[in-house]
Image 1 (cartoon, rainbow, N blue to C red):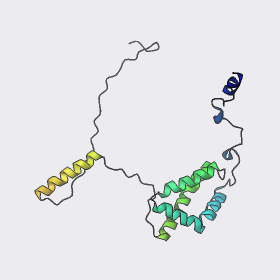
Image 2: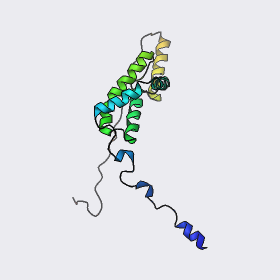
Image 3: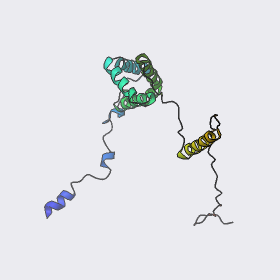
Image 4: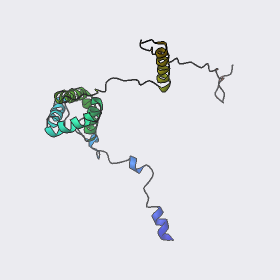
Amino acid sequence: MVKEDTQMFDAPIPGMAMTGELGAKPWQNPPQFPTVEETLDYYMSRMATDAFEDNLIEVLKLGVDVATIANTMQTSSVMEGVHTIDVGIIVTPVIMEFIMLVADAAGIEYDDGMTDEVEPTKAEIANILKEFKQMQSKGDTSEPTIEEPVVEEEDTPEEEPTGLMARRN
């Protein structure tokens, strides 16, 4: 019976995983490359290899956009203590340009990840198809018009504040 009681107290303390010794993590120490120039040299030497270019081309063929690749590279380098987050943000556009240069040289179409493409909702698609079918039945060959969705605002009545600290009218 004593053995069971001692095992119960051998469990980790709640929140223990959230603490650690200061400096134990790579990002808590000074970076390997503190300046933008040194960091760019680090990335250019890594990205100029044939192995990196081959892997990059495969990832781009899978449809991953350039911004995601560049952000992933710089964020993982920050976590490894290679450079600080502010230097990573500064060098990200250069990394993206290099990736796009490799893709252009390989003749690969890519998404730069800088535009937010809004996909139409199912209701919008249904309305466009309905309009298109109506035009076809009438013999009209012009393009269907796409209407912007109307967002109706609901009137919410003002609620009187209640509670101990509410102001009296």
